[in-house]
Length: 396
Image 1 (cartoon, helix red, strand yellow):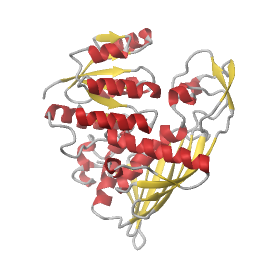
Image 2 (cartoon, helix red, strand yellow):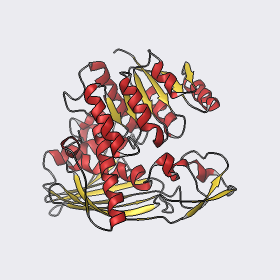
Image 3 (spheres, one colour):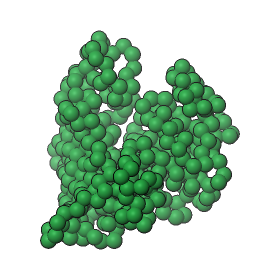
Image 4 (cartoon, helix red, strand yellow):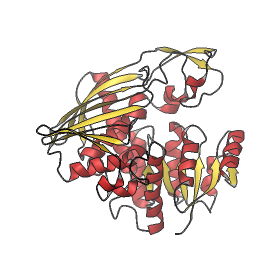
């Protein structure tokens, strides 16, 4: 297996998670890490044995030995870095949201037509073994026609008005927060599993804390909860949503509803969905990822525990340990990266065959859904999602 050189840009919460997953991905050499916090970069490089440390993302793009770039920066840098990587002919794995706006993500898709490289968005929840099995159930028709999807993605890390992070700032995180940050994960996941596309939305969003206390120094995502004493800081206005409820319509006429929240006490990272079909239903909870509920009307319900011997044949390659050996959050990115790097080694022109990982087209589709959600909230009515042919069926 040919070793592929990778570089990670960004050293916040998700950057080291990428590095750790890449270290467990076959045939990948993490060659470089870049950050505008040099001490943090040196600490991570020393921990993982990364030989090259850069203090700018531009240096990564200029490094001729780097083949794949992992963009783990704040949202406002996603478009610029993704675009530069494509123009340099480097394969690119981006954190979500793909870009701050759908105009920017559409520009990346147009650029990829001229400069095709392997491109992926880290919608990592697709890559759990039981999610792949659930997708197989719907593809072969075990659920029957899907008529209802419902669920939530709820957290508590921004519950207090003293909780703060760059994601709260529209100029850095974007005009949407809870929907773009975690709602995009949920929407991508249920569309992938069901094979259906969200085509229209009706949204009601809310900001619980119209003002928050901004500390004098940056707070890493999720880390504010670990501070026992309330940080001193400046009172600042909050423009982005803490929570919301979104009703939606599917391309086959089905209906759905999702609640997103970053202010739900006790809920750490609960991404839950149920998909109801004419013959059966399935439900899954990200905090209990090794079990899949399968509902029936005329016989007992089932709980399928992750076991490679019981999974769909295609889903088995996403389960790396025997039944009873749990696999969870760190394994999703590893599975995604494994597929991405196999595509890099294949040297096939991207787009000639269906990708077995979420691509920039999937990221653009989620941006379009966020656009429609924000417009619906402003106008207080149903809004169509402005899908193009490549996003309507983007899920691989």
